[in-house]
Every structure is written in C-alpha cells, then in structure tokens.
Image 1: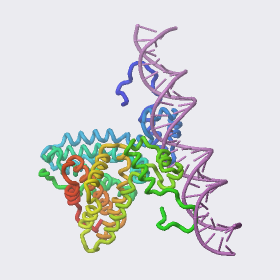
Image 2: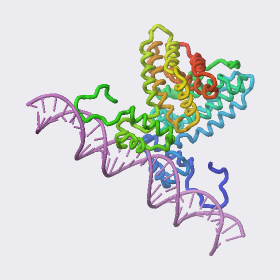
Image 3: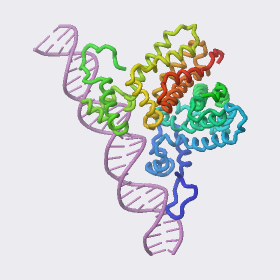
Image 4: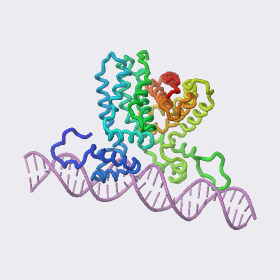
Length: 199
Length: 199
DNA sequence: ATAGGTTGCGACACGCTGTGTCATAACCGG
DNA sequence: CCGGTTATGACACAGCGTGTCGCAACCTAT
C-alpha cells in the first residue's frame, strides 16, 4: 500500500500513516473515539479530511496500524519454533511476546484500544478482520506442529480458541484496569487444548 | 422496546418490526446488504426513513432479528437449569437445542448464512454484536452456576469460549458442507473447561 | 358529539462517514 | 523552463443516525 522507497518525482507527502495514527490515538485518549471526528484528526495533523481517507479507508482503521506488524512478528515466531515442542507452549509464548507492553504510554494506548473493542460498535465491526491473522496463523501452525490434517477439526478449533483466549485476557483487563494484561493472558492461554492429531 | 400489548389510545402503528425486517431481508437477498439503503426499505414498507429508525436503531440490526429470539430461548433454557448440574453440560445442551435444525429449508438457510459469515466482510462486521447475547448469557450462567465471582476471570473465559465453540463448529461445517452442523458443534462444545469457582 | 390525552408518523434540519472528481501544488528529470 | 509524476485541497454527493416539531389517528370521559 505505502511504497517502501519514495518514487522519483512527484509532490512529497506532507504527512504519513504513522503520523496520522499517532495524532488520532492522542485525540482518542483525550476525548474518546466517537467524540473525535475525522475532521478533527485531519486538522490536528494539518491536512484535509480527504487526505486522511487516502491513508486510511475508514476512521477505525487507524486503530489497527500495529496489528499488521504484530501479525508478521507472530508468524515469524511460530515459523522459527522447534518442531518437537508442544504446539500450545509455542503458541502461548508467541502470543505473550507479541502482546508484551514495554512503556506506560503503550500500556495506556493498549488499554484504551481494548476498552474501545468492548464498547464501540464501529470498532467491534472490524474485530473479525483484525483477528483474521491470528485465527489463520494459529490454525496453520497447529496443523503442521501436531500433524493434524489441514482441513481437520482440531486446527480450526485451535485458531478460534487462540482468538478467544486473547479476547478473554483483554476483556478481563478492561474490567480490571488496575491489574496488568500479561497475567490475564497467561491465565487465558493456559486453558488450552491437548494436542490431538487424530482429527 | 416494543410493548407486548397495544397501549390504550394513540394512533395505531402502520407497520411493525417484523414487517420491516421481512421487507429488508427480501431486498437484501435481491440486491445485497450495501446496495439497499434504509430509504429503500422504508419506501418498500410504505413508511418514512425516520420511522425505520424508530423500530431499529441501525440498518444492520434487521439482519439479526432471529438471533434475538434465539438468545431469549437460550437464556430461558439456562434459567430453567437444575442448579446442581455441571455448568458445561447445561451450556452444551442449551446451545445445541437452539441450533437444532429441523427442516431441509432451515438447513439450507443456516448453511448459507454461515457461509456469509465466513466470507462476506459486510456480514462479518455484524458478528460481534450478533454473538453478544451468547457471550453475556454464557458468562452470567457460568458465574451463578459455579458460584464464581461476577467479575471473575472464569465466567469471562466461559463466555468467550462458548462463542469460540459456536464459530468452530460453524467454520468446520462451512468447510465440510456435506456433513451436519450438530456433530461439529458437539465436538467443539466438548472442549470445555472444568468448573472452577476459585477465580 | 366533542374535548383532552396519548401515541405513531412525516417533514425537516443537522453533523458525520465515506466516495468521486477535478484543479492545483510541489517535486523530478531533461 | 517544461512535461511527467505524485500528493493534496476544494467541492459535491449519497448515506447513516439523531433531534425536533407539528400533525394524524386512535382512545376514553363527559
């Protein structure tokens, strides 16, 4: 979508997806998702409303900028896993690694985004697509790591269960924001299924 | 929302939620969800656009009219459960009962809708809200049946796991349409959690 | 029959999202 | 300086969702 190298010639961009996303996230934290219009974001970033929609196809897309790179990191961790290890251990480690929170700023944003997920319909409408990567990665990994058939029942269940565990951890966190996300994720991911290559 | 008995006095309604939903679904089948505006639905039903929003708060709400009554049936089954039975047995029975397919017509429709769920983004956008009932009902039931704290981790996990099981069964069914839904649901629901009132 | 209360509806206006179109600004190389 | 290229802004438009207001259509009581 956004080219790696600036093509030769042409007017240089006055902003970037990253800058727009940062601006938007700051405003969301200040006033809340629905109290911030695209016009507000564009004005704060010094561009027109139309330009915002050239970088993001919808207002809520700005919430999932990190998701793409997280998916890549997740897939890499799974690809590099020792084939002899239990699939569920690897899956748990990889998921925790990707969701690790390093700074207070990132914690605040992650919490707010999670709150939006569980309260704003416009955000909920995108969850399916946002977690598609997790579902399919978890499924494919479970199939190859346990030797289950590609179209079998078990890998499908693992993919769905992985997403459910993520949502469980985040939902608990949102309802207990004084706690930390990681323990909740650990607990949710510990409710895993034993490997079963039969189906 | 819509009163059970017509109140005394006042102008009688010229339409109903049921009539609007039927009209809308017919148009959706003909042209597709996004190719039908609320104005179109209202016109086809012989009312104004404003009146549509008096019966449904959003356009997409009419997609899940059946889901609402299913939720009520589900909640009733859970409410009538023997308090001494294992929560997961009751949950499984109730979920299977609600999803039981009685006629070939209903099977075809259920399969078609499931296929839409796993392929059409416009439909996927509604899934979160559509399954909100199952999530919250499963959660509340798990809490009271196992004696777990209302805000505890375990009920949250049960709610999410219930939805994940539903999706797993349906996803497997969509990918193997020659099989039946119920066995897939049984298998998915059998991957349940043991009751744990501690958390 | 008429008056007053109650309830559904249509008309209108408004802010917001998302899209299409077009002119223009700001860079490139020759 | 001059086309070619790319990002942007201005504008228009359909659609969603909400608020408000006056009116229409029913009721019951007098």
